[in-house]
Image: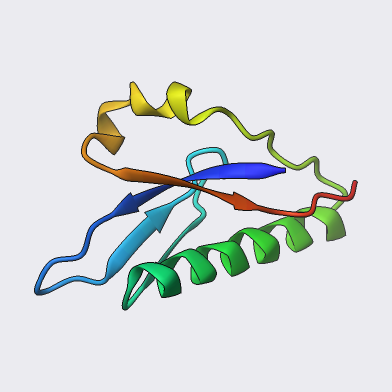
Length: 87
């Protein structure tokens, strides 16, 4: 399943930030874009492992279009990360 991620660009003082709108509380950061995407993929996988251990359902992935209307994500760059979801 592909999950949209919102990427917040870095500046001179901050790393690249990444948030997963469909997975509440799941976010990460990295020193460069590739690192940020790899780190958030690991964060999603770890979150889903905890859900599986507790027998909780995995959140569904929404479309990027749905999230772009949220002012919280204004100015973000969007990407999709593939996560193997085996329930």
